[in-house]
Amino acid sequence: MSRCTAPVRGHSSSAAAAACPACRNRGSYGSYSPPSTSYAYGGGATSRFGSNPRPRWSKPSSGVSYTVLEVQSLTPVREAIEVRAAAQPDLRDVFLCHAWDDRQGAAKELHESLVAAGVKVWFSEKDLGLGTPMMRAIDKGLANSRIGLVLVTPALLTSLPREGVADKELSVLLARNQLVPIVHNTTYDALRDISPMLASRSGLDTLENSMSEIATKIAELVAI
Image (cartoon, rainbow, N blue to C red):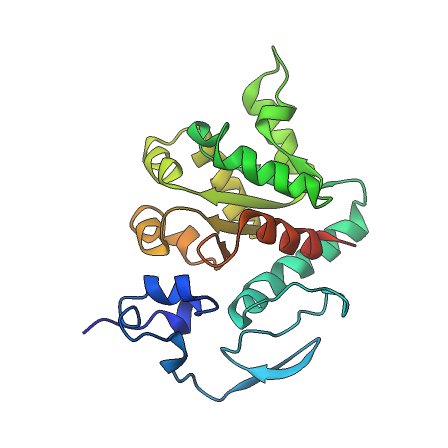
């Protein structure tokens, strides 16, 4: 029997429900009945799998909508941002880790969306100058960014077993425990087969949000 993914992923859109093996044929993702456990957030108490909690870093005037899972997974990252911002106020907001094959595609799109949202990003296509030693530049970029974003795509899943540059970046970010996976055109199940440790970190998914919506959430997350 197929298992509903709502307790893990949430069903904040019809597309997400359609991707769930248990709910795709039910016609409505509202048929899942979550536990009644409640948690307190900036916008008050909400059911554990409700769709509209407000994290404490999101302004009341914000029109951005979060799932409970997103608030739960992003709260420790926000706490790390606040600590690093107090100690090192001049750091960039994020380091963008991506597969080499995505540099002119999904990674570029995400970078442009983040910059448009006001996020200061370390991005290899912009920050690796000609003649600059790659690994040293990446090392400095990691050290001088508050958190890391990992763009999880089919290209990244293919590259990680080869233990290339993206794998080295990811190893550092996992050790720091300050990263947000952004899943694009793949699934957490596929990621779990390649990197169970990264798959254990909840993040954001373009099945649930557009690139621009994800960029807006990251912009709110890093704003100090």
